[in-house]
Image (cartoon, rainbow, N blue to C red):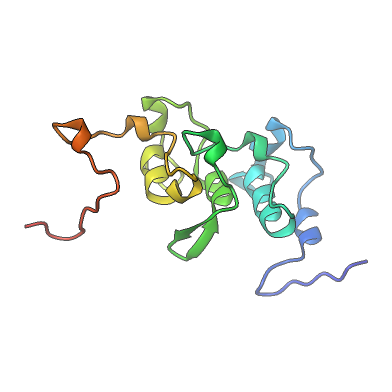
Length: 163
């Protein structure tokens, strides 16, 4: 029997996985709420376990995960992107914060669990998850230029007082 090590650094992978009932990765299993934490999907917990406990880092729920990229093959769920506490894998952020949404203007307006529209969450946090940096909702973002070709999407808008 492997030794269970619970510490400030985490929990053994088998102990983490033992907290949830056996599953095969069906859609219904993956989108279900965690039994002791309503609002948190089993998919999120499986993604966390897969990130730290599997090589390669693919989870059994990966087929049911929202793809934040316009080009599905550009998505890298293991890519680390900056967050306020350091870095997090794309797949974990997608599973934790993105609702299932239809790819449409209305779908991209769907609110995430951090009270931001999907399109804003994708642009702010997940562009590094797509190899080509083109997000699923990019076609629904307003181009503010009178000449559409003058748009510089990678330009920088400064924070603070604009004089």
